[in-house]
Image (cartoon, rainbow, N blue to C red; front, side, top):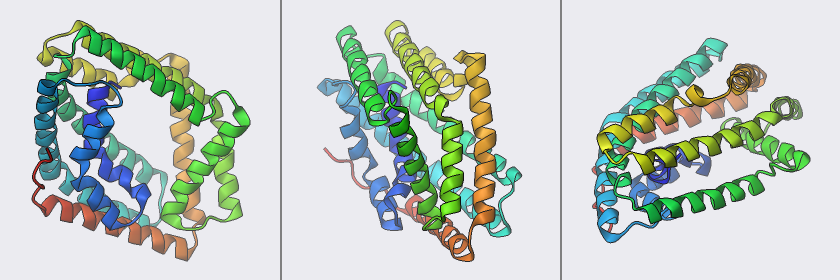
Length: 293
């Protein structure tokens, strides 16, 4: 994903990612300061000149306002329905429903963000684009290092620990059997980590090539959307099949974790869903804060 599109999407997604921080206050604080956070993170990818920075700030504010008005209420509805389904007990159809909802939300984000980002992307100079490529390479090296992509044992432990934490955040302390179920899933799909990393770099290369060659924002935006929203279009058949197997097995894992959940774990998950649904309702109703300089 290119730096500008990634930055704009982060602005919208930061309140979702903030779930990992825990607590409603963290979600509200992160979302209401998203413009500052995103402008800071964007500097990791390319240095904007003053004019570009002003344009980016203005378009980020527009995007943030659109997202607050249009998407946050929909997130609250989604979470409320998810809570009702969770209360009855999760089945595979519920996971498929949630995945379809999330993909639809992501597509709307990608379309809107790319429209705004493209207006800045087309102004990047050859030197800025070359700098972006170098920074992406450095970031990929860090990504591979932190995820131990060249050391299988460390990679497996890291991935299992990360997935354990994701379930633990919702269910509370996991049982030994639940942790073993997660570890088995991670081990069965370990090779996909490497394939996805190579695919990540491919999409980055294609995104940068589009930015370098297409200087009309009206033409650039839909091509970037296609690249990010439908990455299967450029993937090898083997990778598409591996991702399909991963998603099917992940659905079964989620259903198994729900079935094995204790009454205490289920209550915690329901309370967490309700809190976040309320949080999104509150955020949608708030007036955006004045833009920071």
